[in-house]
Amino acid sequence: MKIYVPMDSAAKALGADEVAAAIVAEAARRGLAVELVRNGTRGMVWLEPLVEVETGDGRLAFGPVTPEDVPALLDGTLQGLGPVEGIPFFARQTRLTFARCGVTDPLSLRDYEAHGGLAGLRRALGMTSAEIVQEVTDSGLRGRGGAGFPTGIKWNTVLGAGAGQKYIVCNADEGDSGTFADRMIMEGDPFTLIEGMVIAGVGVGATRGFVFLRSEYPDAIKVMAAAVQIARDAGLLGPDVLGSGRAFDIEVRVGAGAYVCGEETSLLNALEGKRGVVRAKPPLPALEGFLGRPTVVNNVISLATVPVIFEKGAAHYADFGLGRSRGTVTLQIAGNVARGGLFETAFGMSLGELVMDVAGGTATGRPVKAVQVGGPLGAYMPVSKFDTALGYEDFDAAGGLIGHAGLVVFDDTTDMLGMARFAMEFCAVESCCKCTPCRVGAVRGVETIDRIARGDAAAVPILTDLCETMKLGSLCALGGFTPFPVLSALTHFPDDFATRKEAAE
Image 1: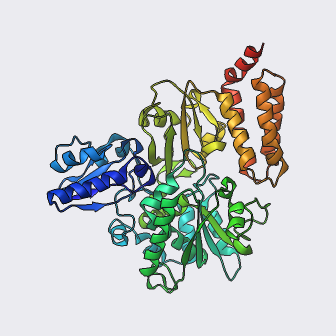
Image 2: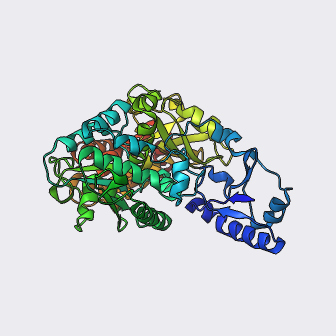
Image 3: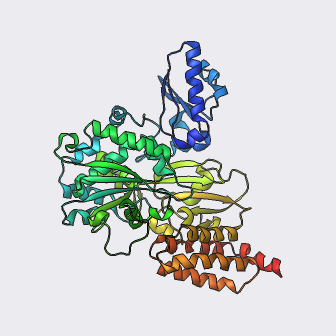
């Protein structure tokens, strides 16, 4: 028997290690020959630990599985979920970036190649640097870290910059609440990130790369470090990438836990051993980045998507999506939700369809009140905005932002004034303190919301004016985007603010 048990952090937190140990022990007790593969997760977190058994008809899913279920699993009497790909949540997805995640052994390069891995790199190695950058440009890929900036433009800027040394920096400092796509890729399909970074290096003329990984991800750190060494031993990294004569190598660096290091210039400072504070722009990192040299700074999902673009072609990838939002978006569904997890689909699905149909509404069964999209700095979208299509421009027009595509669902018991206060407090705690609008504005924001909570209606216009100052004057998105959750809560849920005044009276 061949049995798959995820080694993903979420699955392990829900008991996957205990289930794997029970399978090994029970198989030994029975004298059964069982091959146990610790794969990544398929992303259906409410079913974890999701155990898969390989059969002649494909892999059958069982979950959530407990150690007590193992005897029945090996007997063949445990009630299953049918083929994994037939589970409705999974069957509705368009998996491009996450095509291998949960399918392969994350640290088997042979397994990776057997499922299409390295095909994109081999194609790229036969192209000129300009052709590689043009392919990425034609695909319409945009930064998946939050800004949505066209990846091809960034690469072309670095390609055209004259310098003896250039760098590729992967921003793996995934700190937004409700986001876990970067972690899933690094733990479940690390070679796709490595391949994407190599293609980027060959494309812009960089020979060194860094993965800046947050310290709160110990499993991802371990898997990425192992994958880099395996890739180096196999000639995928080093002075002669796959015998092409091109050089590229990667080093994994671990951050110290500052949220602001998710901002690219703060990250670069930290990577250089400096305090993680925001740099003023210009100069742009593409021209003066790491150690003052031209640097591509891309998110994990952006880089991990590059291999499939080269494997299947830019036109194939660009054929998915909506307007200028091309390809797929890796949505991370969390919070008070019935079916949480990762859902990869082409841009264009409505927010309401995703939350109410795909995710099944709230876990409590109560009405949905709001969905925060884009992490702790994202706007709270009310039910009245559920017809908004998941696309960068569409969300911008609706007063929101997609960001890293994390969604946190709240039911009708949520106090939105409290959530607005949390946004300001979060900004105050995580600010690098370099600019006044963020450093002082967030602290004053907490105080002003507390005044509103005590019934001071005169503080409402002060809050809106403060948010405008932070939005226009902050050096980076931490202070500049904090007004999104605050003002959206105030605008769409005024009763949660007005009741405080009425209670005080």
